[in-house]
Length: 500
Image 1 (cartoon, rainbow, N blue to C red):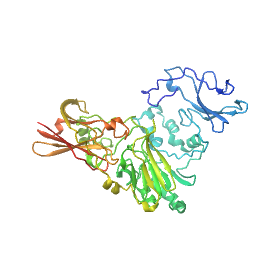
Image 2: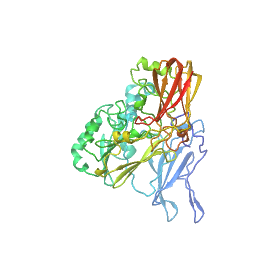
Image 3: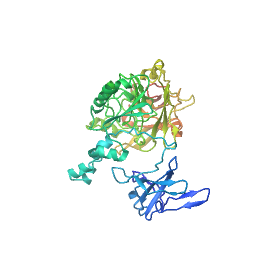
Image 4: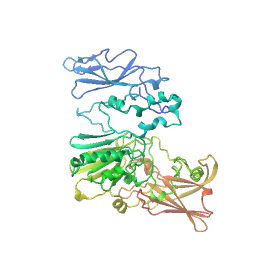
C-alpha cells in the first residue's frame, strides 16, 4: 500500500496482506520462504537483478487499514538467489531502511534493466536547507527546545545523511565523470547568496583546462543562473557570479530549477556565452510573466503579493480580481530526458506520468559553426505569433462573481477559442485591451488555458476565458480586443467585441 505526502489525496488501494514468492514457469513450482513471507510484514514490488543473482523487494510493518495508512513505510531489501537450485542463497540485506536518515519510505524501486551503473547527479535546494522554517513555525511547535530542533534539521546533518542515503561522500560542490562527460553539481548550503559562483569559480580555476574544448560538460544547481533562462531579477535566481564563471566555457550546459516555471515556456532554454536550461518540476507548476503582462495575469498572482513587504496597493489589486488563481497544484509532473550525441544534445520535454511530449524537442548542435539557435534575440525574431482561426468569435457576458476578497461584484466574462500555434509557438497568454467611451484603454492579461499541459492536451486546445471586475474598467460603452501572445511577446491579430 502506497500513499502520497498529501494526506488529503489517498491512494484508494492497499494490501490487506502481501508476500513475495518465486514461481518457476518450467517446473510450475512455487518457492515459498519465510525470508520474503514474514508474519505481520508486507513484502511487495519484487524485481530480479539483470544477472538473476539478487531478488529486490520492499517490506513494511503491516498497519491497521485504512486508518493508519500513513504509518506504512517501506524499506528496500534484497536477498541472494541461486538460479541453479531455484532457492534463496543467503540472508536478506536491508539496503535502505525506512524512517531513518530522512528517508520516510521507498516505493517502486527497480534495478536498471541492462545492469549498468546509474550515476547520481543530485543537488540539494532550499527545501533541503531551510524547509524546517517554513509552514508558520510548525517545526518549532513540534520541537520547542532549540537544541532538539537543531538535531532534527536536515541541514545539521548533511554529510552523514548524504553518505547514508547515497553511499558516497558529501561535498558542497563535486565533479563526476560519467562515460567521459564531466558533471559538476553544487548544493544549496548557506542560504541565498554568492555560494554557487564562488565555489564554481574555484573548481573552474583548478580544472578549467580539462573542461575546455568542444565536448560539452554539465553544471547543476537549484536556482536559475541570473541573466539566463527567463532573464528575471527575482528570488528564483542566484547573484550572477555563476553566469560570469561559465561565460568562459561555450561548451557548458547549465541545468537549474527552483522557480517551478513550466517547461512549455520556450524561455526555458537560453543560449549566450554558454547554454542554460530550466528543468521544470514534478508538482506545483508556475508561470513567468511575459512582457505583455507587466501588471500580472487576471488568473495568477498579482506582482508583489508574494514578497515579504507585500505593498498595500498590490494586495488591493489582488483582492479586486474577479478570477481565482490558475490551478497549479498537481496538474502536471514535468521532466526532461536529455540525450547526448557526438554532434548534438536533444532535450525531450515530458509529462512523466505518461511519458508524453508536452512540447517540441530542443536540439542543441555542438558544432561551433552552428551558432546559437536558442539565443533569445534570435528566437524572438524568428518566432511567429499565434493566430485565431478565421471564424473565431469573442463572446462577452455580464455576470456577478465573488472577487478574491470574497465580495460579490459585477464582472464581464470574456470567452474565446484557443488560438492556433504557428510554427510551434503555442499561445502562452492573451492580452486584453478594454477601450472606454472616451477612447482611453486599459490592458489586462490572462494565461492561456492548458498552457502548462502542452501540445497533446485537450485543455490547451479548448477555450479560454477571462473575468474582469467591472469596477476596474473604464466607463462604457466598452470595446474588448483579445490578442493571442507567445512567450517572447509577439501578438497575433485580435478578436473584437463591443458592449453597450
